Length: 428
Ligand code: GLU
Image (cartoon, rainbow, N blue to C red; front, side, top):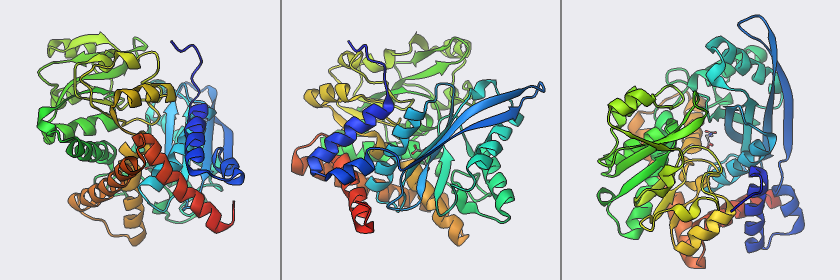
């Protein structure tokens, strides 16, 4: 049993160190890549609806921009820490490199609980965040996007503030904008669909038909909902979803062994993906403990919530039937749990490959914003599929060639690309 407190940054560094050893990286490159190049920590004073002032702590961490401007989302979360944002910024660098888009890695966060903020307060927070870093981000420096508990509306408020400050139109400043306001068709579904593009390829390699599989999903936010949508379209059956319940301050797993009805669940979910307990019961779903998703008798697990969900405390509870794990979340699996999964021979599609669909579509959004011409949804999703499939095949070929665990193979490709860019620029 693990008693250590979890630190995402320590985990990201441990993963990096392993890749650096495999690549025999020199000391200067290691020193450059195992920590962020720049970080901004700031306070955001906000006038609340009741007239009082409250101060929120916020961050932007720029891990590495050797391959292009920094890129990565902004999270609104009550448990946000700078170490989590540091880890997430590192994972963004590897994510952009593994899908080979010309972008670096960044991440932002605000310590806040959007559940208890009005829309006006959220708008004030978005605008204040941009004012605090307006000189250090931008289309050619660092490009934010949505992430946990932020959405297209937040992005538009941020864009509006940036454009007001800089006196011009800069649609390339931010991605995940609303369609019609510089956003790309397909961006909302891109991360979840991307998870399933890689899942489909992995099943092909394993010689398993999607229609013969069942899955358990952790999370019911944007990533989980669209992963379920496409997985069901290719014939898969999801038997449960787990989600956080803000009222009870704990998570629950909602199960229907015949398969969940996505449209019905969407109707009883709030904007954060929390299901209404009573309505779920009326629809016949069993309510199980929050971590029950991990021990279901299924072929596939899709952790699509937050970091630190498959750990040495629960990894042994994974059913013998599970053959594949597709990580929709960032950092869901600890290195200790990885060791166990590797030994068990479970095929893992690692986070920064599986969930790269979001940032890949963000890249396509930037291209469209820059040329001011927007593609149809099928064209966007078709390009996304080609890019995700190519990245999956490159990682899986590397894993076979060097007899590596999939996560290590993905790290090898991504870190080598970033290290080369640093070397070529004369940074290391
Ligand atoms: N927040 C998403 C991620 O973790 C998307 C980032 C982006 O589009 O820049 O990959």
